[in-house]
Image 1 (cartoon, helix red, strand yellow):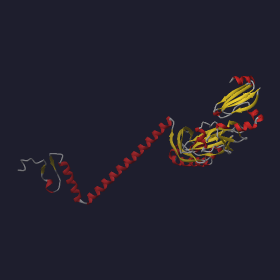
Image 2: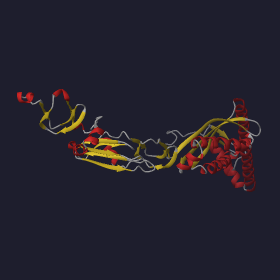
Image 3: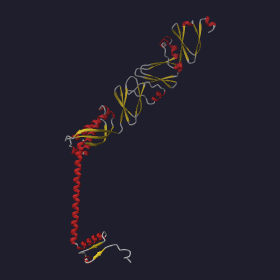
Image 4: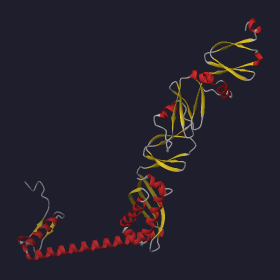
Length: 386
């Protein structure tokens, strides 16, 4: 400030390139100063200079309305306004980069000199889905406050609910939804082939024997929408169906029938389960009644019965073998009685077998000369062969 400025009651204001200054005189907005040196008339105590850093972008000031009301041309030259309608979203970009996401019924005022600025209006669809190509841009710019991200893993199907109502299914991947006041929920449902075990289920047979059974089954969800809309928990419904079907099938049989017809029981109960589960969107694979566990005392009795049965079978086999041996001897005797030569050959075979085990053998009533001579059987020594 010079001596002349003091005499003329004026002041000098320097505005930087990165700044804009709002001039207030006696509390009223008078001007917006651009970069450079400015000479302002009037006393210093009557004038107030409000500096704004335009690099920040948004213009947040209680003087905004006064500027557009009293100095509309000046305000339009320096400031740019963006506003969204109810139910609309705007992507505000600064020099080609995402600067801000405006939710429904919002406004934003920025310094034009900090731009260039552009805005893209978006009408969210009924499922509130964000365009897939926009998601990485918002995440990279850290402007995803109005976006809810949900990931659906491989082997799963996502069920999308908006405001409590089912909308559609989602394939595996990352999905984004606009968070504009309506609650968004994604329920992931496993559609891979899975196994379910029903272990240690106590059941009562028709003859009032308490048994415990283990059941194994394979299943998968083929209609996710039906599976979640028909029942509260499809896996729990499958579990209960297995329990009920096998309890009913086993309860109609005695213990002996169950042990004899286990495979038939499996098939009948399994068909009932498959039919019931098809109605709620579940495809059932193999079902097996793995184990039938008896009480301790019943197990001991059954073991005794089995042992007795096996002993009886062994006796039958032994008697059958004895009968076969006797029949064979009888047949041999008939052949020898009808054929004397065969009888003599058998005698010689017997003599040969005995002679190999004794040193001296006397034969009486044998064939030919054997009946009259004493036969000494021994191994010849080397001296005897000379």
